Length: 313
Image (cartoon, rainbow, N blue to C red; front, side):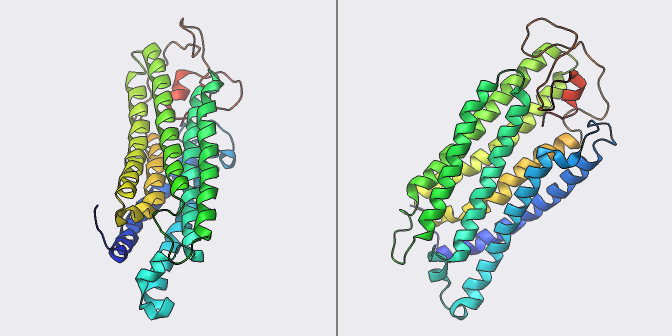
């Protein structure tokens, strides 16, 4: 068992979360700029940006991540300055029934749920017009994550001095980790497979485009999954490093924003548009005049150039 004192781990959490929160803020501002200027740069159809799920989900995520970071800073001052003049920060951090602790955990779990919802939305945009049954599993895991999130909040609110912190919400926490890992792995695998199928049909004009898009999605999911596995490992080892889970909102949100920023900056398709290739209807084995890419905008026909512009993300 890796032994790390609770108070130093709490201080390390403040520093690390602040660092990643700064990265997230920069990425969030850049993504907003790219989203609102996409139409001007020819990367988006003329439609209301305010109705974009990316903007709505991103704004909710910003509130959750910022709220979590603000409470982390507040708890630092409560532990070392305000409560009992900062004489016993260990007892403060060990009391999970504190309103600030419950609020902090709630913001963490809400941000995790929003990120997973955005991942499921990306899967929907890729598969909507092809096979909607692929959405059943991630919909169930997302509902499971929501239910376990509520369970964690309830258990934390019932914590009493002397309770075993390792047993606190133990089942719900494990369920949280399992559901979010299942969602990310499944959605990433299905999106990667779908985009690979499209790339095979659109060769050679779409080869670099789809390889890049798949790489971006996989890299983002890998960052979130690795962090989740790190928490599971430290939790199983009963190490105080598990309290670094408070860094989770800033890390997973940054990974999510990286997708929008990289695609928006054109890393997924290069600086110049490729020539229109022969279009096909996704899901068919023989080329036709056009295809629908399933971006949730209605039944209008799309060309492969629309897909390359990153509308799918």
